[in-house]
Image (tube, rainbow, N blue to C red):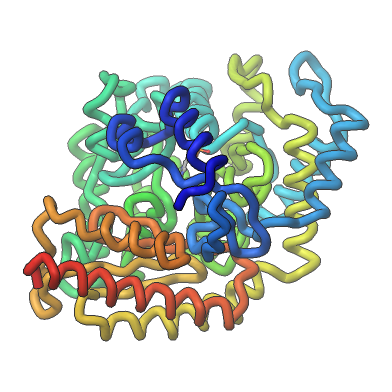
Amino acid sequence: MTPPDTARLQQLDRDHHLHPFTDFKALGEEGSRIITSAEGIYIQDADGNQILDAMAGLWCVNLGYGREELVTAAAEQMQQLPYYNNFFKTTHPPAVELAETLCRLAPAHMNRVFFTGSGSEANDTVLRMVRRYWALKGKPEKQWIIGRENAYHGSTVAGMSLGGMAPMHEQGGPCVPGISHIRQPYWFGEGRELSAEEFGKVCAAALETRIEELGADKVAAFIAEPVQGAGGAIIPPDSYWPAIKEVLAKYDILLVADEVICGFGRLGEWFGSVHYGIEPDLMPIAKGLSSGYLPIGGVLVGDRVASTLIDEGGEFYHGFTYSGHPTCAAVALKNLQLMEQEGVVEHVRDVAGPHLARRWKELEQHPLIGEARSLGLIGALEIVADKASGKRFDKTLAVGNLCRDICFETGLVMRSVGDTMVISPPLVITTEQVDELVRLAHAALDETMRRLEQQGVT
Ligand code: PMP
């Protein structure tokens, strides 16, 4: 029986609340799950169920839930100065301290940051900053930005245009002009007739081909996530990033590494770009910057772009009311300090990441799983109808969603992207909790199979 308060909230939710990325009608018929509290890596719903949050909220609660230090940082800053802006020659201590800390943690050639309220706003900033840079360099015709199919860079108009999610492009268009998409380095989904190594090179060659089609003198930048998150935790073949780097250097094109998910320890380094040894010109950031406790994002800017903007720029007509919001900045600063003090990035790199890699790979033995991959604390499972050929289930069966719903029922948040199951747990997860996660995932796969058998599918 649903408790009365849950039923009341569900009804009010149905009546008044339009959720993000949601089929409103379908949710109205089903009703929402109401999350009321959380601690560590577990969330709790209004019915009293405890659920292991293997998605860290939306890839963001890196330090886990219930950190008093972050609550205190917010409360103290709100008492001291809840809001002031960074416009008109003013600033405040949290924004300055956070900027310094971020630039210290970022690769050596990145020494400036522009703050935003979210990852989407960070990518809007990227689009304007990249085109501004080339205009200042006397090459205003360098306008094209190349992104990738199935990439996610946000839900604002520029964010969704830079992203490569076809269903998003189909709604509310047209997209921002001057953005072109190339294929993604998704070996399991699109490249298994080649070795991963060869496939990575083929995908990088697609960048060179596109640059030549558009004209190198017209291409401003390439934008990509080091590991695609929302697209399905797509870890590129090792050959991919070195080949991309070469192409960009050859044609003098800026690299934008979207670190909104990969930044702040997810891959076992402070930034995903460091893991792959790429040196981006711009890095949009958000999510783990504050462990999701308050909304804040930004763009880390490399010296090459920053020096042009500063020395030759004049006014950059861009910014947000909440750029560098003092309370959000104070929480982000405390979050980064705690991560440093507690060695969270090292924990991912040396302990939790390698342990997950071993345990996660065991799931490949499951009859439903065609591939189990992970890097640091991001991972994916490819659900297939036939292990040998990698053939998928009929799309109408929505097996990924079935598995996701079973996970929720059995105490695990795992996300589905089509028939790819994705995890991105809080970075503070212990090895015992990794074992628990894998056990829950295994049980959910068994139950998914049982229900498919019941339907006569397998
Ligand atoms: N870039 C990437 C890589 C993301 O994963 C996301 C959010 N999932 C965004 C940008 C957009 O961030 P936000 O939702 O904070 O606008």
